[in-house]
Length: 366
Image (cartoon, rainbow, N blue to C red; front, side, top):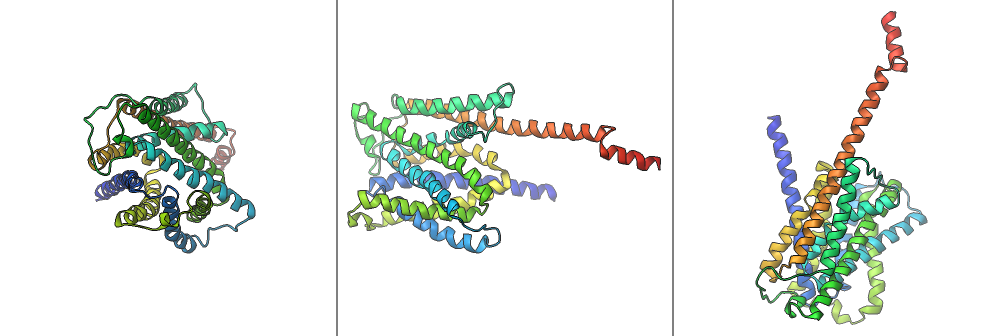
């Protein structure tokens, strides 16, 4: 009976993780469709974050009343900076990159985020690296492999692996000549923007760590981040998107892409990811990230008619290898630390001069 319950919980977690990656994969495709039908790269994230704020704000208000610390000016400034890095730069670079590259390689590049995050955390002293141990070596090698894979995707497109598929929703890049200099230049620019997206995302997670220690109300923190993200995108829109026609939703397709981005990619994904991390831990959740790339590749080929290129495949394999190497290193590091704690505790308990042993010895004598 207990075994069946455990299996059931594991099955729920696995199905939830697959659903999470499917939602993420769908967002890549939906965002590509939104750009193809002409949705503004500024209007799209504004509407997305407004919807997310409307979903998360009330939940944060009612669920975190007791654990929400008082707001200070310093905290508001930190929320603003988190929004600048995690919302404005993150989503802005993503849409700029997706406008030139394909959803498949946008997803492949995102697999480098754990390694980049580890590199940034090590640079500021949050993560410790001991190259003399195998866990430290694995994290170092994984980081180099992930960064190398992202670099290969950026500078080397390579020949196509499949016959080109034409589709009415296919990306504008794919409609160019495959080996034209314009197409190659666009692809490189797209990958550079996507690299900026990954750097922003990694920086956001590193910056979140000290803020969460001061302000542990996660939903409220996310709500404030979305709020300041909307303000920042509106500030950008005041200069680059002054045509009111671009703010009007012209078709059902536009409405669907905006609702998907706000409801599914922000609201549902955030809740589902939080539940999965609580049940399986962040490492276990991160291991499923490459599943998203596979799903995106299949969906992009079927729905958008996207092409696969050898350079992207090589880069994606390196990134995935790097991801698993870093995750294994983190897991092994945790195991080693726990073993050392157990040995220290055992040695302390067995030490005849320790207070616990001395006290027990006196009681036995009495």
